[in-house]
Amino acid sequence: MNLPVNLHRNSINTVVRNLIANAIKFTPEGGEIRLNADVKDNEYIISVTDTGVGMSEEAIKKLFKIGTKYSTLGTAKEKGTGLGLILCKDFIEKNGGEIQVTSEINKGSSFSFSLPAVK
Image 1 (spheres, rainbow, N blue to C red):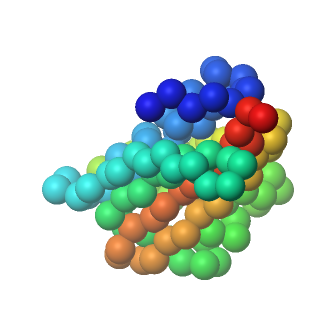
Image 2 (spheres, rainbow, N blue to C red):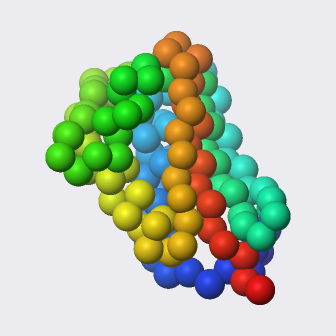
């Protein structure tokens, strides 16, 4: 799907790759990962949803804070730095959007971000 937006392509590609890589990292074999794009009002909503390990509300609050480094091991014991989501948030905001997460432990997570439509 081609969506007419005014953005920095490489930074948004980095965000999508990071969200998909995280979904893969935290979803056990046999799980499901979905990438979705929707139009809502004057913006586009891109989401990456998985059926992975999920997170607590307390963990979600730490994800995008620069002073609070938060990282956990993936399902195959992969290590992370905790910086990927902080960079994603920065890239999305510099492109005029917002990033959000919803999650439930043992049920999965959904990361979504908005980008303003071209008027």
